Image (cartoon, rainbow, N blue to C red; front, top):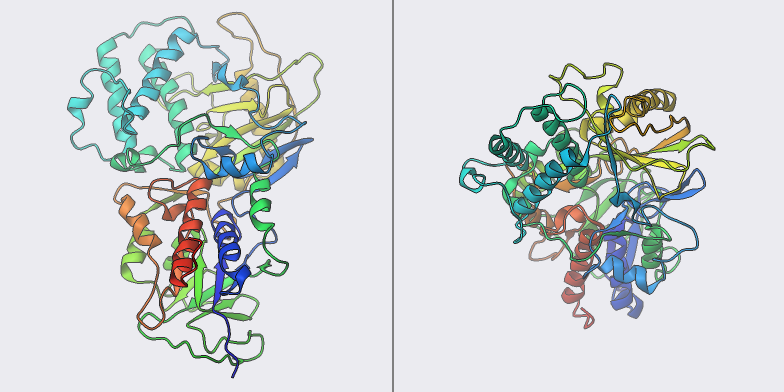
Length: 530
């Protein structure tokens, strides 16, 4: 009879999974306390981190920013491995995005005297919603917060209060717009940016109370010169060859909520299965027909994948949807159902060479509201909720625009040639010659396009989580709670950005969650380095 080491299987080789694997290997598996294996459904590591190349420039298809350098473990790793410096320019490296030009869809450059007060109002309202002490909002808003449930309704009420105080309907400067309507359009531009920050299709779906519980790291927000994937590669570099297995798509996890055995010997459970699958309490079934047994499984798949799994839990079809057998407890299913999860996509465009165009500006795009008479019928609906188009650094020929929600899904479905045609039509409208200040911008053409497809990727089914109206941060705590019973402790553990109640939607939140679950198991096995 051969006594086998406990086996820990981590599902997903993204930030959470590789952080857990890194910690478990260095603090336990390396010394023989247990085995560690990482199974990844895709053909690469990184998950929602994917550094790539387009138009001769390094780009990020997924995670882009270190959100605050003060206390960020991602920033610390980037410093340690020298990833913050590069001889080549990288996305948003030189601060030129602090100097935007704001234009309406018919080509009018909007005066800062009109744009800045609305921008400042929006930022003040968001600071207030996020509980920042120095936030200042217009008089009367704090007294009228009764019944506010969403960030969207709070912002709507804030703008209404501001406009009532101003009480100005006169036209000022550009065209024949009613000033209030124009202010609403500028305000909506910032709301669309906020949608990409949160992944909420509509800010009316974003819980107001939870917004103030979210924790931001202090300090500047920066990108990683050598690419976000350098962080992932660093975490994975300590793992021996063979620990990470790619192309292993999980179909279901068989676990034992009430009973389970953990005998001293392993046995072969049949063709296509690994030794030991009959003795360990958890069994993973893969789409290729193979299985793998484990004493503990850390699940790091996205909230979108979990949502799809509970929606398909009653189906007996071999749909390829990630499931649990038996299904998860009701409290976990309810938490998964209530929490928000959305899609954010990036659209990269390559500018055609133009000797007369020194650089493309950081363009903030103001679209007319639906009731405005000057709404341009040539601009498609899916572009109307983006907010900006800019080079990825000051003189790059690669431009970037962000899309969230329904528009992001539509972007994924459109052929590249349609995107190029419709974006060109839209940008031509913005760069027309009807400028208030007489400073016309040259028109431009695009050579090619590249887009992310996080919504349609079955391994992710979206981008990141948020606290939706009707849910709370307690649901993230419920999602993070491990599945266990007396005889088989810590059968299934959960990590990933959606399991961290104060840093969800971020790479550092995913990092912290992976570290949390690794430490939980290290403590279970009395490993001293916790």
